[in-house]
Structures are given as C-alpha cells and as structure tokens.
Image (cartoon, rainbow, N blue to C red; front, side, top):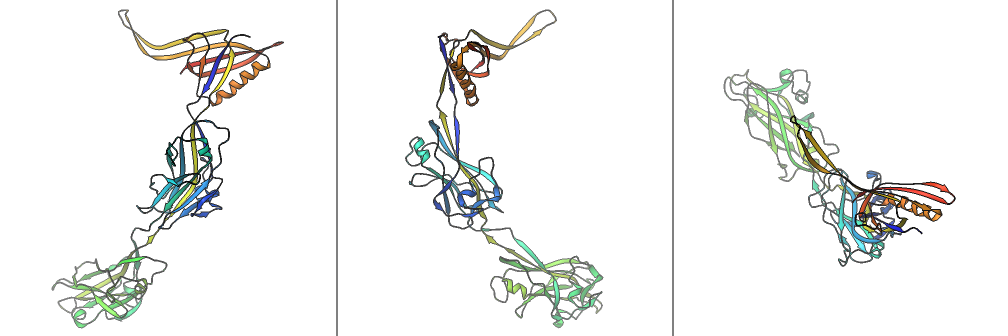
Length: 458
C-alpha cells in the first residue's frame, strides 16, 4: 500500500447548550404560563419574553433551581460553565437594592451565586461564568456537568414612584356664597370652575368694604377622587385673581374647609391684571396629620378678599381649583423568561490517513507595490504576505478509500484547523486551515478516487 500521511482535525473549543427539563429542589418563584421550568426553557435564540415567565415581587428573596440534561457523547477538557438568564423589572425599574443573581448547584451541595445584576424595565440577557467547580474549585468534569443544576434568585423591595397629581375643580355649593356673581353662571361655583381661565367673562367679586373685613367669603365643594391611591404629600389650592389698585393694595386669602374646620392661608397682595396665586397645606390642618383620601373627598376650597378705596373698587376671582400631590410605594415584578447553561470545552481530535499526494505545491506569495518614476527608476514596497499555502492532489482506491474521503469531508464542517504530518518535510508538516477539499471518482475497475486539497498555513 502506498505510504500514508496523517490529517488531524482540531477545534479550539466547542459549546454544549443545556436547557431546563425538570424542577430542582427550590420552586419559590411564581409562574405565568405553566410549570416553572417550562416557563424559562426556550432555546437561546427563541425566547418568548412575556408569553411565559417566572417572577417575584416580594421584598424577601425567592429562588428557583432547575434540573438540566446530562451530556451525551461530548468529551474533552472543559474550559468553563456559563449560565444565562433573560430578565426585567415589570413595568418600571426596580429598587436600587433589588436582587437578581444566577445560581448553580452540583449535586446536593450548597448553591453558589453570581454577582448581583442591575435590571431595567425591558428584557436583557445576563450571564455569569464559573471557570471551576463552585463546590471545591477543582476543574470541571463531565460527571459534575451531569450533576449540574441552574437557577435564579431575586427580590423586589418597594420603591416610590414619581410624584403624581390630581386636579379637583368646584362642582357644587360649599356652604358659603357671599361673593357677587358676574357673567353667565347661576351659582358662585359655576363662575370659577373652568379649566382655562376666562378672565372677566365669569367671576365672583367682593367690592370695597364687603369682603374679609365684613366676615364674608366663598366656599366651593370640589370633585372626589376616583381610583387614585397612595401617600398624599400636600394639597395646594390655586386661584386666579385681580383687584382695583388705584386707591391702595387689594389682597386675597385662600382657604380650605374639612370636617367643618375652616382654615385660612396668608393674605396676599394682588395686581390689576389676572394672575394665579396658591396656598399649600402639607398636612390636614384639622387633624395635624397626613392627608387621607377620605379627607380629600370631604374638602371644600374658598377665598375672601379686601379692596381699599371707593365702593366701586373690587377684588375679582375668575378661577379656583385644588391639586393633590401623591405617590405610590410598590414592588415591580422581577420577571425571568429564559435560563440555560453553556458548557465550553475542547473537543477530542480526529485523525485520518490518506495516501501521500501524487503532487504537492508549496506557495509563499507576498503583496508588493511598485512605483515607476519619470527618470526610469522604480521603487518597490513589501506590503504583507498574501498567501502561504499548500496544494496537494492524490488518489484513494476502493470502498475503504471512499470511506476515508467521506469521513474527512464530513468532519471538516466542524473543524477550525488541521495538523498535517508524515509528508517527509518540515516545510509541509504544520497546521493549516483547509480552504478547499474535493474528490471525484476517476475509474470503476478498480474504483479510484482522485482528491484535491488547498490549505492555508495556520
């Protein structure tokens, strides 16, 4: 038999992906879409986000552990195990002290955790690498992989969301209507209930000597709240006023009434043109405690004013309303929609034999540039090596030869590079990338296959 040479296929690394297929020894998260492990077992490029997921929105930490399959025919040194999770906080960002970690277990030993990850309100991938077994820091073995379990732990402490406001406008008589109506309104509250101030078109007024000094004022019932909840930080009453200023400084005072207790703010000087004024109460003045939503529903708002000078001078109010500022404390759901493990390893090499080539050609090409000058001289620059390869051709006989060629052809689909030995020269025996490999049947009796291989030096 013709002497042979050796082709050894090599890969720098290979990945084995393992997905949950059963529940482990912890199932503390709440599922949406089936059993916990089935909610997060999608393949790495096929996640379904909010279609199925597990979640926790409690302050306390909760964990899930999932069983993954054993390896099958894989072999070789394991470089690392990498666990992936895809998660978010729904539907707003979590507390700064929220927990989200990836977990591993080997057998029944203690659970090991990744560093803590910061979530946002959109799904993102998170990953952590263990280069050695978490139980004893030894190198990974395939037996450890077969005993591996993966999971997540998370918590969602309460957070305070952005301050919200609720505007409440006059909608009924409030128990006192001393001001005079001007305009189309038939009752005092209708003259000041507009969303956008209509200036002098509709307003209520006190003339000189008929307002605060005489004990006169207006009160208006305002709308109740509806579905709002949360902690109330303050109530602010707003009013749009103007006054006659020729004979002195007119003033107005805003007030509230709750539970039968009337409370006035500070008298404020006003101008001859309409301007918006306000008074804020951070607590309920009747109880000296924080505002409650029931107190808001019982609230009335009002005003009084003074205008020095002749009786024809007036203080006018064209608009009034209250704004309730509040916030909610809540815990967003910490959702996980996908968890899986990747085992990165160096696969075993495959060795093949072929008859030594009939022809062999070694190439070493470089890219150069030239420049011709007007005086007939020339400059040449060496840019880089463009090719350093090997071109071989040979033949194989019979069904055994066909099998060898088919095996090489199939294996090259999964090979990074090959090592060539046995060509009787150190010029040829080294590592290569295979650029092209082909073979064809040249004869039938006996069966002869001709092969051709083009390689680039590694």
